[in-house]
Image (cartoon, rainbow, N blue to C red; front, side, top):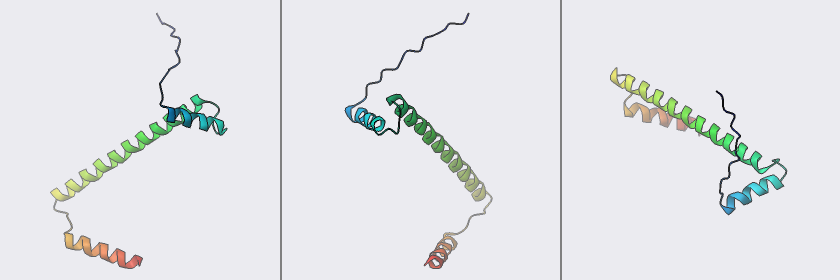
Amino acid sequence: MRLNRIRQPMNIPLGKELEDLIRRKVESKDYLSAAHVVEEALTLLEERDQMATLREQRLVQTLAMAVSQANSHQLIGHEDVFAGLAAKSSAQE
């Protein structure tokens, strides 16, 4: 048996600063309603979280590759790294 649930509106207390910000956004005519402002904010928050997850995954992949290179003795000495950075810096000047 499938139950039909009526969605209750959420009542979330916000501080005065956030309420004022939402009100200003709606008054600016950039948003149709307070709900629209909150929806946009949550969408941007979700996108930010997804980007953070992608950056974390790339970092883990990079570290795994670095560990693999270190384990197979494919490391570059610090002298070569600094020489390469100095050469790049000179080329940009």
